[in-house]
Image (cartoon, rainbow, N blue to C red; front, side, top):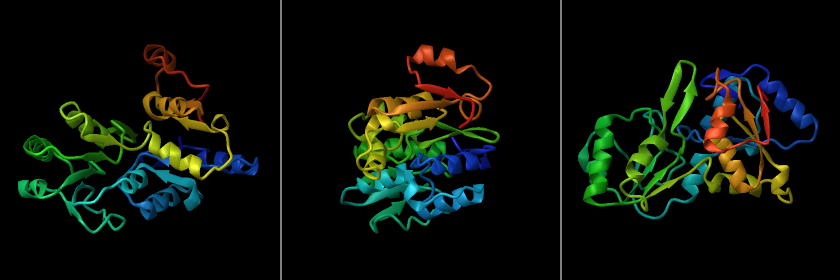
Length: 245
């Protein structure tokens, strides 16, 4: 848990440096899929974090590694150049024909998503069910002024109707954890600790993978709330709880 929106959590940068100094390997796992790898690196630098490229694992990268052949209709931020995607991609907009023309769908960002476009996606799936890959499994994300609705929310609306057609990437799904483990050869799973602010992504994903977990409570999703009752209700318990990392 390093930032809320565009704001660095005080002391997060120093904590990473302290962990590295103690010999700990750092991996920053993010479900944010609105930017390619260069954009994610730029965001970390803008926050004032010194993060190596090999320390960053994204749900977008995981989704792109699993793209199959065929043309993909991409739901992305307007400023996203889509340079890291295959050539056979088409940006979806308000034109119904663009939804009918592609073989599959890839959902990366809700930045320009609207109820009208969700209706077009729904209609396209009704007319011809296809694969829908969700590049960011989050339902919502904390921001400086509240919460944003993320691709996972819209993906579940389609998955309720076509459960075998929708695939989610990012926490708590396994592909991103496999990516991290591949960069840490020889490290037992129980020696990896996931630090995060959400029970149903960070803590659940870590537990399912056999990792340890640290629930960060002061900032992010549960800011201002006692997390214990939410853990009891969901039966998701972290190994440790900290106000901040």
